[in-house]
Image (cartoon, helix red, strand yellow):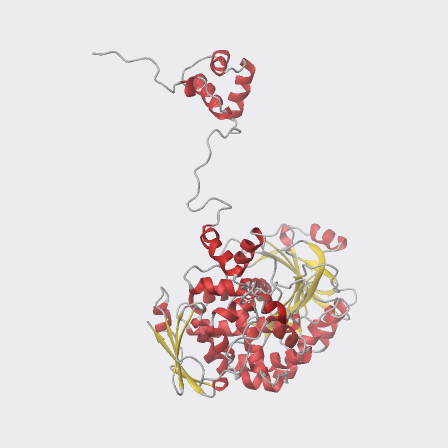
Length: 587
């Protein structure tokens, strides 16, 4: 048999490696596999004995990464295939004088969609400047800049005579919310609240335009142009030919005031009670503040504590109330200053008494929502409250002095590890600034390191019921997280170019609409609004218009069976469509 030959060509890459990690690998292999000493293994690749000792120690400690980790599927970080494919076409369209909005719309029509942010990035990378939004007449007709007119289409009332008989939409599912808007009688709510309209756009259409942005997850008002150009469902939803532009929506929002928001919320709450989306009798509410962060410079705003940043920062302080029975938001206010925030609970009681004829039965809140004197006012009005007590040094000493025999174990009606807390109860407890005495519960075993101290003026409910009430208060934080996620309640721009009080009211209305839709869908009783948006409201489809009917034919998706079995009305007359009938068809 013929013997093997010597080293093949190219062997020097392995016998005399040049790459650092390759040399390390060969030295380690010689030590661990070939059994060489530190000095012998190091000599193979030019290392000293102590360099090899340190190398082996680092390897054993897991501090060496000799091989690059396997790459993830898809393009490498920093690689943008969609932008690269469209780059030449974007440059070509800009040389024709088109704006980022027009280029994005043109690319979508050509089957290579690219959002306007990516279009703008390409233009900046290629050295193109911004087009003038209002060019001079001589510039717009210059041969060097043909088609430079970047004006967006003007809004107008919806004219079904000129509206296309058949049109495709990427968000036809948005029209699934129209029956509940009609059920809430939104036209009457807007009219009775006194919202202003304009000669061209009625007040109802203004609010529906802003509401469409919330429901379609449009993060900022400045992004309305993307929705304005690309999708007819939003304009049909608002009863307009196209949505108003950003500047028009901004100007309109500042024509509304706190009285408008307060009036529509009062009327909305009556509809929610009638529809079973809020509790009328024995009403119990969870209350909380939320600071909406401001990202600009030199804002004329007070500083408030922002939990997401764990610091005090310039922000808009908002207040929310949630119905404890249905977990739906029923009240919001962004017209709050430091001097008035402690009395916001009283303002909410006045609001609820005005619409229902009685004060709330119980208010459940964090200790920072109000002060002890205001708690005294609530007690004088007959309103029960449930809140936490700040742990002062004297109270901490009192808690430390308690022994195991001073506590009673109770079992809560909930699953999980912390359903058997221990409670020490005391009555006749006095608070600084509070005119009477309160009932105090010191609770351990709720999953916190320090005991929870609950105070209340309700002397009748068992301790178990009080603790369960306070545990459910945490759901209001979940509601706030949901409206931030789904309706972008935290998207306060540096220019504050939308009346924040109006924006917060629209979040409450949007949350009520998604709650009503959720109740119609089998198996979706507890899902969050963003799930409804992704699975149903963003469903594409075709809108077919006849003389007296608007048919929304939704495309087939994985969740179409849910819609086919949903409790959706067969036909709904829509007042802002000239009483035309809305009809659904599911593929």
